[in-house]
Image 1 (spheres, rainbow, N blue to C red):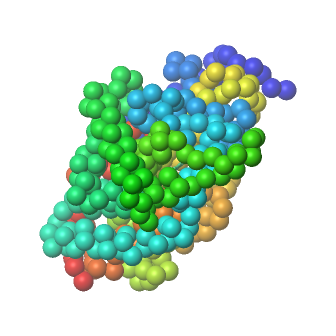
Image 2: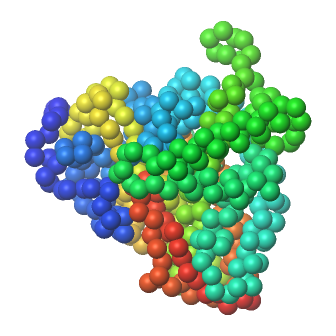
Length: 414
Ligand code: HEM
């Protein structure tokens, strides 16, 4: 028999504040308690629900009927740009409209198109990493991890190299705001407008001079409308929305993955030794285990549009639900009693929640893995050892994203 809310007293069982700095420093003890004591958690003060178990997070991702994306998927929707829910980003849309755009966008985002980037990603990695090797001592985030993903997204979209520094700057302004502050900083609004303007001009140019890039492919892509049977194409706003989403979804997440891998490798020298010993085999495993152990996307938010029974409760329509991806990835029921151990040899199978699941499954998952494997492969093959200055590492404090703003390192070149 299920209860309906308001779940008196439930929130007192375990105070979980996703904005708390100590939670950001190490969220995993809180996740473990949530899984043990309140796997379906309600916080009355902040009025949100959270699902902590792997099975419930999985079900939440699949529950597109009752769980909506259309208010945005971050704790503070402004992270996805002003008025994200009204923007043309298809991540913040529900089916059937979401699926219509996703189908079109996927056409320009096929495994072949992504694999074709291998040569460019390798060259870009080499370009940035060789400068780091020359320095010997540097900030791994600033000098490497933050550069590669934005370059790759730009490469995919066909953004000329000369424009990328400015674009990276706008993307930083758009993303870096203080959590919990709902007013969007002026700089972020300005950056959003600038990005919008830049991408509109790029589209206009590609209409006149089509190339081999994704934007040209998106301008051309068409599908049959399920209802009318007519051919449909993406609108201008939908293409711009997609391009801004690429910056938001594909940039910071992959930057954090590159740095989280090095950090946890450095904290687990026995595991890193396996990577040094056999990079070909172990680099992809290193990437996979980092995605599980400390994923850059920790929390994805949904809005309930129909009463949803979970565990012993019914989450009422209108409420927010946090899908705790980072907790699902440490669930002992799925990953075994040593789920808290960083072990690059483990087989995560299909159980990873790191890229979401179902209708909104990350479109860039293959690209993110490719970038990480090429980037981390180059790093490990070119050095004999790495010292991470853990005391000077600076964490990003964010509800949704986990990783470092600064990671000072010293490497010994091979
Ligand atoms: C969606 C994670 C890299 C593009 C998602 C979602 C997650 C995620 C969890 C699902 C969100 C939801 O269900 O609401 C990650 C992680 C990454 C990564 C952890 C890197 C480590 C990328 C890259 C790109 C990308 C490199 C593209 C350049 C997208 C897009 C969606 C998405 C377009 C929306 C799909 C849809 O709504 O149908 N990502 N992502 N992501 N991601 Fe990624």
